[in-house]
Structures are given as C-alpha cells and as structure tokens.
Length: 137
Image (cartoon, rainbow, N blue to C red; front, side, top):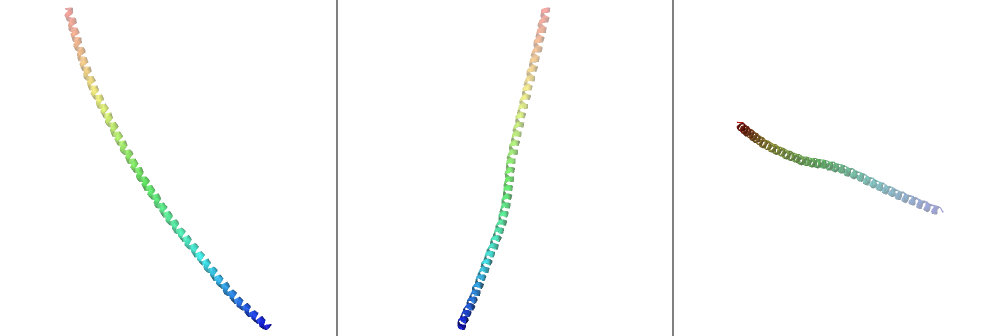
C-alpha cells in the first residue's frame, strides 16, 4: 500500500506540476491575448484620432475653399452688376441728353415760327392800317 500511496503521491505531484505548467501557459497566453487586444485597441484609437485630425483639417480646408469661391463669385456678380448699372446710367444720360437737345431744337424752331408769325401779323397790321388810311382819304 505504501508503494501504491507513493505512486499515487508521485502521480498527484506530476499532475500538480503539469497543472501548474498548463495553468502558467494559460496565464501567459491570456496575458499575451490581453496585451495584443490592448495594443490593437490602442492602435485603433490612435488611428481614429489621426483620421479625426485629418478629417478636421480637410473640413477646414474645404470650408476655406468654399468661402474663397463664394467671395470670388460674389465679386464676379458684383462686378457684372456694377458694369450693367454703369451701362444703364450711361444709356439713360445719353437719352436724357438727346431729349434735351431735341427740346432745345424744337424750342428754337418754335421761337423762329413765333417770330415769323409776329412779323407776319405786324406786316398784316401795317397793311390793314395803310389800307384804312387810304380809304379814309
């Protein structure tokens, strides 16, 4: 029995040593998996952080580009509007000047006609006066 107990004790010691070895291996494997998972999580976080920074930069650049394009387009529209306004103003000034010239010409013609009619009326009045004097005599 001692021999059997000795063998059982030896078997238990061997099994215990193997259990310790397996337990140690599992622990090391678990630690490696945990370390790998931690490293993966850290790299993923760093990559996300970097991507977020790049996205912010791209968004900022896009906003700046949009702002510049909008300003350029506004200035283009403003330039066109100012040009059209200037052309319209010039056109209106020319038309007003033409109308003023036409009115001056018409006024001059009317003044000439009035002077001619006045002279004609004076001539007829003189003729009538002369005729009346002749008849009285």
